Image: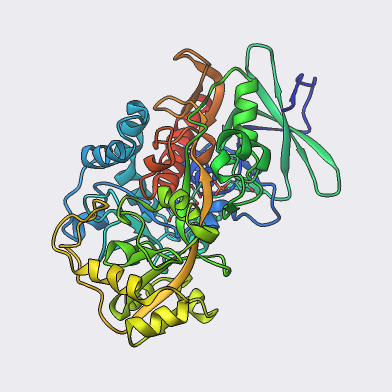
Length: 460
Ligand SMILES: Cc1cc2nc3c(=O)[nH]c(=O)nc-3n(C[C@H](O)[C@H](O)[C@H](O)COP(=O)(O)OP(=O)(O)OC[C@H]3O[C@@H](n4cnc5c(N)ncnc54)[C@H](O)[C@@H]3O)c2cc1C
């Protein structure tokens, strides 16, 4: 990864440059502008989207005003407990502390922008969350989230250069970054100087060689994130003397409609649905988490499974745009009887009946799932064929609670480099099972704001 010797003069100089116009980069830029400091966001695409636009736009946060209005009692400590519970205590406590403390305030602050409207998602809990704390745009899509952030950034006077692929950094031997080189689609090159650099260009999910090296179990799986996320941040940061951490961590998903390639909300599982393989047998505790379920589903025959549910859960699914799209594309099967559904999806009817009968259980089952809280599935029945996929990587640059990139092996920061979102090491620990729903956007918006605020203070 290219580090260049600083030139005598740059084509342009701005105090703060942000690489990447996803949730992290735009949130960071908003925080910089709020402090009255000039900021330039560089985005490789013609139109900013990132993995943020592909997401469901769900941001977990504790203690927000919308939670309080809904009567939900939550706290940073409770969110931190849930994060560490999922990560088996292996997430960096300093980062968990920083992002959970910032989570409620960042939602309130974002909602304070005229263009941004984040609601509390109610009616079900995602695996590992103790209370309702997902905040999302009204239509629960990442497309709306990025559109809202872009509108707010434009209103705040953030400069965003698109078709601006950052291909190298200028840095001195002691790790001081003095600027970036960007390459235009026509091959043109521009060198821009800065006092501080914020890396918000996500992880390495779009880089097959890095995925094979760090998470070989996902090497052959479909990648559903943004292909432009090539691992630039972690490669630059390491070249500058920083440290890559938890590179084996990632968010997978065990419920992507196949062959349609559409995310099917895990709310179906949390509210009573089950997964069976193509023999008609259940194979797991569906409540453990959708991330690790990617690996479990890929281990089934044909690397697929069927989500099995009923009309009540179909109605819940229809509140999600992705699910409505899946239905419109013919992914949803239904039948009045178990036999009819078994015939429709070509699985053994007796095994399917036995699997559905398990949903009437009133205790913890053989996989460790407790069905006592949810209603047994009843006719008519529904099914969607799904597979496991890689959504985004969670490993990245080791940072401190101020989002400053730390030097390898120590706790002193590099002179002027920040990272947030997928560019930084997340709060999921080193394993796929450590991903708590929403850890992706949580670290994008909280670390984005923290980085932007801190960077603006130092140059302001
Ligand atoms: C299908 C799907 C659903 C998801 N749902 C959720 C959810 O509901 N909740 C949740 O918390 N997380 C979810 N995630 C994860 C979430 O999308 C990411 O964690 C989050 O968007 C990361 O934000 P970011 O700003 O770090 O990266 P991104 O949004 O990916 O932005 C990074 C930007 O950097 C640009 N870039 C990269 N390299 C360069 C370069 N060298 N020069 C210039 N620009 C560059 C990219 O083009 C991109 O626009 C989901 C992911 C997927 C794939």
